[in-house]
Length: 422
Image 1 (cartoon, one colour):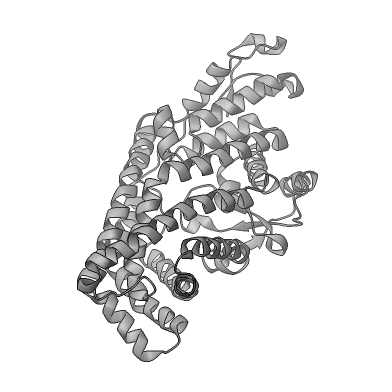
Image 2: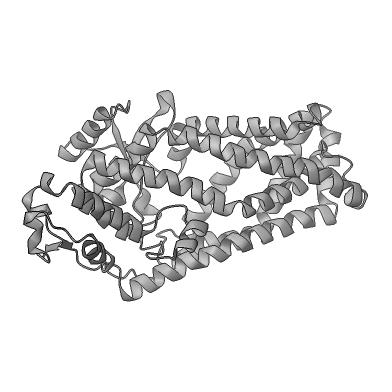
């Protein structure tokens, strides 16, 4: 990174936030920016097409009587309703996943390689998908059985109980995933001793994060994206960062990222996300509770589905729920983005590395549109844009200019990011 004294007035307390922000934005130029914008904007259409294709597959399961046949098969194999529901889940998941496989290959493998976002071979990607499918078979069967249990038990208020079950399962997943799920896809090793590890743990201790180790996982086998997290609840809390963050960034950038991630924990974003998303789920389940019986009254005989409590209604509930989530996309994006902004502000205070964080924001803009319009960011971004993150960093720097070392009081002009090969 080269440094220029674009503003000699920096030494006397003057600092041009806009010029400093623009210096970082200039890191992402030409082919790199065009590819990033195209990749991210294409994702807008993936949200729509993902909903439509998923809805079409579930409609096929209803229209051709597959769902009714799977339910009848499960009823012959088991008398207990919960076991019947779990057995139903087996053919439902396998058949729908098989039909959706071409779409999954395009979105998860082909398109990622097209934009230089994946390092995986098709075999490696397929192995991970198979692992995910096995996890979905086991945990999904439990989740569906619990939801249908409350549907049968509380016919008038199952929408309320189903929301509670969903939040309970999400909480359980947050507790389980760091220890049992994530290691199925990556190898986690303690970070080597050194000044950077010491500084990360010192930040954690200063902010009362109960973690006594830092783990590094090998995400580079999948992608070049940088990432980190403070995950888990209670005894499963762990600080993790991927090898890309260590290998592609400076210590200042690593500290900036880890300050942000510690912010998520200190600000209780997991709990707040569960609460706010719970309200969204409540509204969607209420919509499904209202719409499903009416649709079954009209089409149920044709589909072979008698009532909502029959697991054969699952494709219909998935269509209704995914429709609700699709409409709520701007809301859910905003919930996440607000939390991210708060974590950004916390991380700047905790790490005190404004240039490190602005530099990271540009690296993240390799696959996120750098300068969207205000409405576009509000509707489609679940994280702040690179522009807003760089500007926030430079505003923090301007406010704390006299507290920084002299060499950091000037506007930095980092070298442009190299174009990634597709």
